[in-house]
Length: 307
Image (cartoon, rainbow, N blue to C red; front, side, top):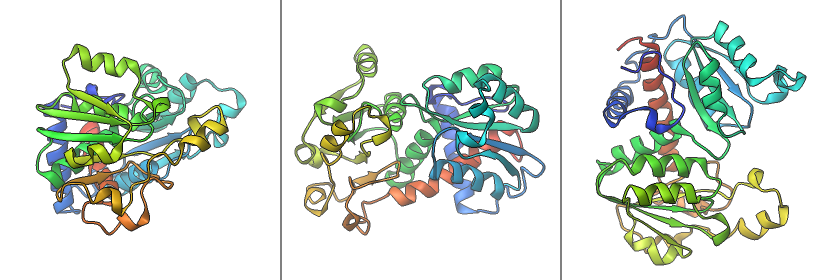
């Protein structure tokens, strides 16, 4: 049971609990009236200390479609954080008004801290370069719906693997499934953090590293593209030098399997050419819609309504 539970990182839920969420999300996808009005009278606080489009809008759309309401702010300048209010006090205040809190914060560990001060469930919508668990649920649901399974797949992660919280969360989640092979494709400056690689090595999780996307493309069942994140760089010159390292276009994708899917947490900048959008393997906008369905399933589950 997920009633009253917080979601700070993907490991907070067991595989069986995630499977239950996926099954519920699929029921909602098939009948969008299913569970409609189940959150009537419930309030969701969306506290975004960092910019967001898909995550914030999908949570708000999910709550509104379930009959609930939303309150909150979309950037820190709209909150008392600019007056010096501590995160702990902001969370305790919001918990007085809402039944659950969704929070994005640029500082690693902020969601864990918030969960310790909140009297209502905290849902991590991204904490710095650390975790983004609801994006991970979105990614896993998309893989399951489009490929029919999550295990026994080769998944390539390409781009900013150093700062990419979506990569960190999804890679750790995939490592819990059977016969998953991961290939991490990045320039030397943006490789996967050592602590994650060390974790995989201790768990005997099979992975490879490469700087050449074209070389590994034929092996992939899933290609997870990411943008080089300008906001994570301290040096503008480094960002400019690295931002165009990988650009997926028709020539590069031609070497991929016919049933491969291309995912991206979005927003994209120029790492996926718009000419790819009409390729049947391009799944990133479908992925965005699945994000609303899984967040609907998550909200009704932690609030204990309608199920």
